[in-house]
Image 1: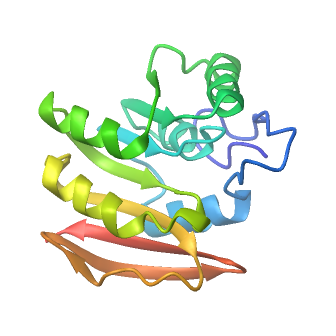
Image 2: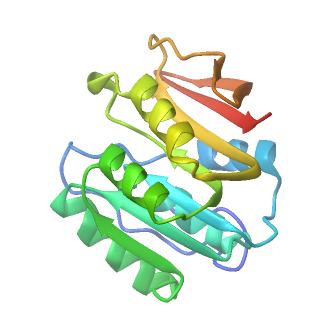
Length: 183
């Protein structure tokens, strides 16, 4: 695993030692950022179920201003902190240990807003619908904001959730990536 483009292009990311984490593959991140736009114009990124932090760090490398990375796993939290330090993103990366949905609701109450939200919940949890409802209900997205949702290829996702409208979907083996934008 490595950063695909931007200021940290080619820099390696530490990956998991065990089978619990599913880091987003380099080719998936590259395709995703081709769809989103190669470079970001500042803004804040929220990475839910962050794992290694690869998506948020890719966004920071490509011009995002700051990132909030959320995970509840001890190994993931350690990897996020190690990768942030190795890439020089410690000052731009806020790491939160906790449940993704509860954190979404808390961030909404704090009035925090994001231009880009990544969410890669465990496929077995079937958490997609609740998570999208929480993101919309918490008012986390800025005008024109985007949600990037990774999910199992057999998991159904809504075409619309509140003001979020599905604008793209790509398949990568057992994984699907669905993009939503604020209408």
